[in-house]
Amino acid sequence: MIKDFLISFKDNFKEKTRNPFLGTYLIVWIIRNWLLVYTLFNFDKIHNLDFKVNFIKTYYSENDFITNLLTNILWSLGLLILTYVLLNVSRFIINLSEKQITPWIYKITDSKSIVLKEEYDRLKQEKNLIENKLEDERENRVKLLNEISRLENRIDELSLDNLEEPQVTSIEKGNSQKSNIEIYQERLKKKDYTDKFVEFALQGEKSSVWFSKNNEPEHIKYFFKIGLIEVSNTMQREISYKLTSNGRKVFEVLRLIEN
Picture 1 (cartoon, one colour):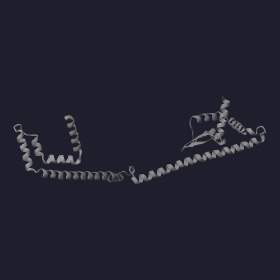
Picture 2 (spheres, rainbow, N blue to C red):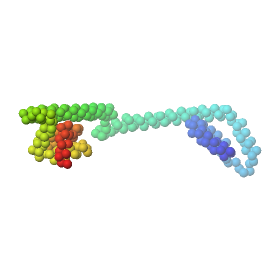
Picture 3 (cartoon, helix red, strand yellow):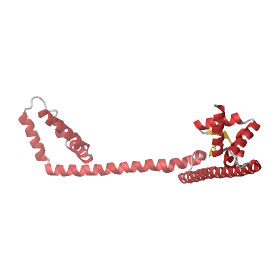
């Protein structure tokens, strides 16, 4: 129990001394009553307890306790005010040096390595606007390319229908889509691109297939031209394609033939 009391007293004393006012008051009291503190720890062995008690009584009889207490409080408050004033003055000097003087010196001595914050914010805002516009342009480009691909596919389908029309018999009228696929196969075979188309389709099933915009293979250009593939995504220097509905049908037929 005594141990718990001592621990509690010790913790309470530490907590109180951390308080700015109480800590300052303790220091002021020790400084203003240094003679009492010094004497209490330096009595000669020849002096007994009564002598020590009488010394303390005499000390406080000559120094009024209330007056001493109020004086210590005033000194403590004054020191606290002075301390915080000095802290704020030092902070003012540091901020003035870091925010005003140092940038000004850098601007004079090495203007290329530093810019004003207003200029930096303005450039950053312009950069964000340009990036947003670029992203919008990319999305619009993808939509436009897909629309072009869809229209070209429609044109090819109409062309294929016109090519087949004289050859369609009454039995074959319900099988026009198959004839379209056969014409696609013939076109690929004629260009010797059948294997390349199957290879592209197999790769597309696993992940997006990207090509350089400035160096697209001829067979990819041909697949896009006849409507077997369409734009899937586009970046600044690269573009990816995916199979159109006709392209998937042709691929399924070619895969069945190979198997």
